[in-house]
Amino acid sequence: MNMKHIYKKGSDNVLLLLHGTGGTEEDLLPIANMIDSEASILSVRGNVSENGMPRFFKRLSEGVFDEEDLIFRTEELQQFISDAASNYQFDRKNVVAVGYSNGANIAGSLLFHYKDSLKGAILYHPMVPRRGITLPDLSSTPIFIGAGKNDPICPASETEELQQLLSNAGAQVEVQWENQGHQLTHAEVAASKKWYELFHK
Image (cartoon, rainbow, N blue to C red):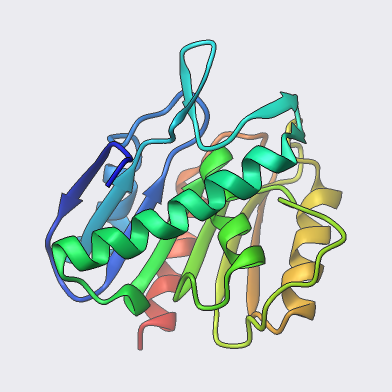
């Protein structure tokens, strides 16, 4: 259990919260409460520091990931979730990721590298974590993507490419577009809540 985190026991549904650059494990708690106020919460702080800002993996520059570190940190998070499931006695198969920006990227990387790592995922403003690899079968993994048409960090073409890669791996992907930048909007959260409720019926 080598990642700073918060665990709150609730229902059998488990929301894995993954903050953006410079965030903490506290950041997405209000979002989780809006999506499913009864769910169990596993909120994790990234183990990498960039000029004092917590992140989930290193980057070489804005939008350019350190691929070696990304692979290592994705494995670290995958193992941490399994350890947490054993420690807190929740079902590892019931974990739905809720990630924003850097957190959405590490959640996307879990999907790209490990079959059945997540039951589903809500990705706010994600990028393509890796290119040129074969994705696992994601046909049983529904995914919600929130994106901004004017996002300077994550251009629309990046979202469209990610959607295509995930869909090609069999995932059901829903994209919610906002005429906004990189910030997380209330409309995105409301749309992800509606998606989540359908997905759990």
